[in-house]
Length: 314
Ligand code: UDP
Ligand code: MG
Image 1 (tube, rainbow, N blue to C red):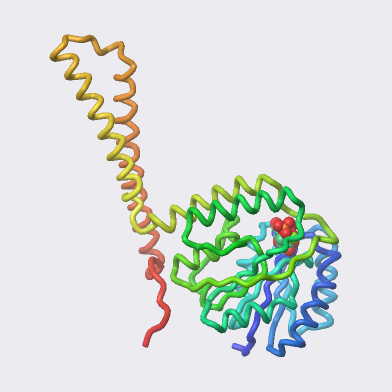
Image 2 (image 1 turned 30 degrees about the vertical axis):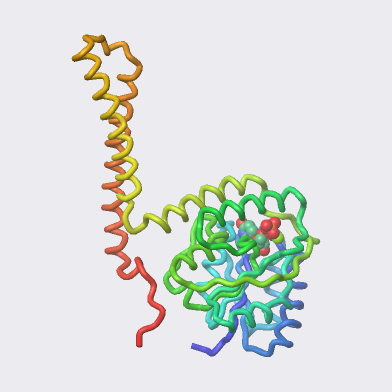
C-alpha cells in the first residue's frame, strides 16, 4: 500500500458550485501541513454539475484525487462509508463539500489527535446556520449526551479526524454518521474535540430539514439499544416481560381473591381485561427476548470477534 498519511473524505450531493473552491482551499491548507494526502470525493448521486467539476479537479491533481460516484443518492452516511472503503491514509479526515468547514482547521485536529486520541471531532462553537437549525441541533445534541456516554458538544459537525483502525470493523448505514463518535467511544476508542470555524452556506442548498430530528432520534434509539443490549437482548425484553407478566399475575390474584372470598363477579371487571392484556404483552416481550438472543447469536457467529475490539496484540 502507498504511504499516504491523510485521506480526506468528502460526500458531495449537488455541490457543483462548491467543489472546485473547496479543492483550492484544501490544497492551500495541505501545502502548509506538508503531509502526503489524497482527497476522496463521493458524488452521492448528484444531478447538477458536481461530477463535471470533480473531473476538472481530478485533471488538475490526478494522483491526489479519487472520485467515487454512487449510482443514485444514498445519503451522507452511505457516501462516507463508500469513501472510507477507498481510503488509503493512516488518518481519515471528513468534511462537508459545501465550504461550511475550513480545511485550515485540519492541523488543529491532528495536533489534538497526537495528544492521545483516536477520534477528534470539530465543534462549531460559532455556528453559522439558520436559527431553527441550531435549536434542533442543540436538542439533538443534549438528547444524545443524555442517552449515550459520549459527551462531545457537536457530534453533527462533519469536520473530524479518525485513526484508520476506527473503521476496520465498522460498517455505516442509515443515517448513523451523527453517532459515529458515540459508537466508537462504546468500542473503547478515545474521543476528543477542538473548536473549529464554521461558515454560512453560500452556494447550493442544505439537504436536511426538521424531519431529520425525528429520524435522528430513531437512529439514536437504535444506537442506544445496540450499546446497552447488543450482547443480551434478553436482558431488556426478558426483564420487561417479567415485570409486565408479574403485574398481570398480581392483579389476577387480586381478582381471584375477590371471587373466592367475596363471591364477587369478575367477568364484567375492566381489571380482568387488563390482566389478560398484561399477561399477553409479558409473554410477547419474553418471546422478543428469545428471538433477539437467537438473532444476535447468528450475528456474532457470522462476524466472529465483533462483540469486542482489540487495541493491540503484543
Ligand atoms: N450530502 C450527501 N448526501 C446527502 C445529503 C448530504 O452527500 O444525501 C452531503 C452534502 O453534499 C454536504 C454534506 O453531506 O457535503 C452535508 O450536507 P448539508 O450541508 O446539506 O447539511 P447541513 O450542513 O445543512 O447540516
Ligand atoms: Mg452544510
